[in-house]
Length: 436
Image 1 (tube, rainbow, N blue to C red):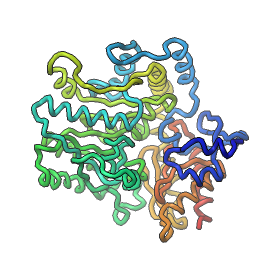
Image 2 (image 1 turned 180 degrees about the horizontal axis):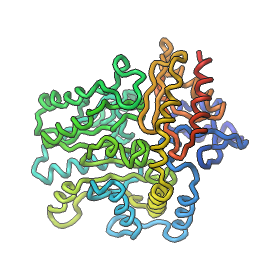
Image 3 (image 1 turned 30 degrees about the vertical axis):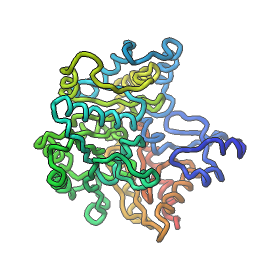
Image 4 (image 1 turned 90 degrees about the vertical axis):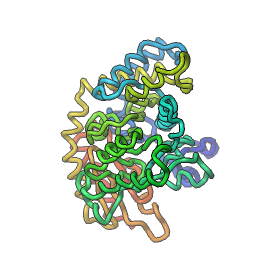
């Protein structure tokens, strides 16, 4: 048992520290679909950690690869030197994407991937003689990490309000959440495609010659599983092509099987110019992110003067242990047919989620792929309190979910079976039925 001083020494991220340290929720080990606490009690992982363990915990292939890597090449710099596995992983990632991109640039997180993509956009336009294109268009209720670049793009007020003035030159499309029109939709909603046309209004306001890129999550995960309507992303792609604007998909959450396809861009059949990834790239075992780049962006920078083409990178870009975890994860995806299994589970997952309709305070249920959300009616003057109460009760009863505001979000490891779906939604049914 940790002492009060030990608990106090760690300033926890995105956590109500005082509340947590009064009654800590601690896990000590994990395997497959379950965490275990210090007493060995199993806790079903309904969130794949933080959306980042698609293959389940402690997968032996990934564990072995990292163990061997640390004994072979513990670190190699990425500036003016490389190691073979980093190039091998990049090639495999391009193949995994269906060869829709030309290059991969390694980062260490989704936040870094977003900042990297922003720099690539600005450098690309400058290389083409359009350095005045510096404005980014994001979306309300979007989440793009916690660096000052990604935070400026993000449209979640709670993530911004403590930190004052952020980067200038960002405007926002409206979000796509509409309970009146789309509540209790199974899969993608019909209503909301017209919201993509708001980009035309923003272009008219700022002048097209100043706009560099549009960045969106294909679906907004951290905001509580906010889905686009059918055709919405295709319309954004059309408008970006029309006006010479780059399109960035932030696939940190949706990449690597979450939609039961390699990426959400496959699910929606829309290819962006840049795609940011992380999380499932290494099955969450070693921190790593990656930006997938269209060939035209790379080629434009390579056409400049000799020397370093992009003055950007990280000490741990392409870290050997992360690369080993990435290669092993891709191997497991292929050999164990993870995507095919995920596809076979989506209908049962959808039915399990929508079995909660009619319970007290449940005002919406929504899903796509192996993602689900339960939106609860907020208590007057206490936004988030009801979902947090459900979260704590669920953990105490052996189920891990996530909350944002009064939305309960779920994104289990892709290896789940029907018994896990029954356990998750059966437990949530009992909790919600008696929730104040």
